[in-house]
Amino acid sequence: MKKGMIAVTGADGFLGSNVVRALLAAGYDVQAILEPGRETGTLAGLEYEARRGSLLDAGFVSEAVRGADAVIHTAASTAVWPNRIPSMRTLNVVAAVELAREAKAAGVPAFVHVGSASSFAWGTRDQPGDEAGEYRSGHFGLDYQDTKKEAQDSMLALQAGGFRLVVVNPTFMFGPYDSKPGSGEMILSVAARKVPGYTSGGRSFADVRAVAKGIVAALERGRGGQCYILGGNNLSYGEAFSAIAAVVEVVPPRFKLPGAAALAYGAIGSAIASLTGKPPKLSLAMTRVSLEGQYYSSAKAERELGYAVGNFDDAVGAAVAWFKANGKMKTL
Image (cartoon, rainbow, N blue to C red):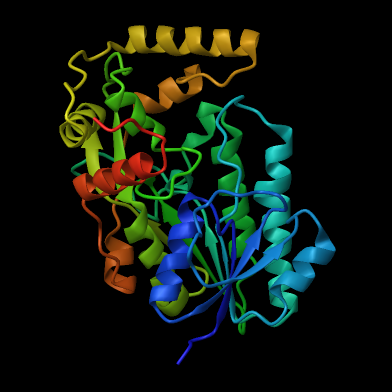
């Protein structure tokens, strides 16, 4: 027996396509809300109902959520270059909040918003950050992080009886169906031996498939008005690059970049990007991020949702297999 119809925005994206698979595996029907004319190939072979339209079109949004048993909102702009993108707030905040308001007005009982772990303070590996930490990423000057935090705050304010709103906060994800590629660019760069070195920082690396299952669990068991960090393995960049290199069978980057050298490299990347108009591999702002040990705990999600942290090597291996099968990576 089907459990209900779930409307999923950004359903053909990296996270969205994994969420669709997790929902179908759990017995739900899926209404995929897709951008007109966009074809990523990430939903090939799956059974779902497609609805194409813009989230900036109020009429389409109102129609798209009507009759759904729940909405999972994964769509967002994740661009980090340039640092400031005026249009980003329109999609990440204004459209996201309007979607939730329309769902609430239509009587949709549950709404899961995909935020970012960066909306909370990170911690050390011994004391990783959790949902109690205040926002600390504002000084990086990235609209992506700022808009995700603003959207989260606005979303939580909509929680009410009869409208259960839950926010999930994934960390940095690897895995299959990364068609852009996005985070998987790190894997491709290590495989192509284009990573000159590593910085002193690190982060929480999550398996996108585990995150997708965590989102389904949040839909089913998440408490309204609550946030849940969906993370993974807390690794330094040196450890992560070495592990990736082992999976793709190349020599890992050996050189640890001093902070000043890393910042200079990022500044050069930003300067060149400003001249050419092409996004840099590493901007100055992203270099500053990479110097921090941005480690997070998923303990709350594990405790309340039954979230199971994925394995780093498995996530990288799945990403590599998908890249190879789709011509995005040469077979080594």
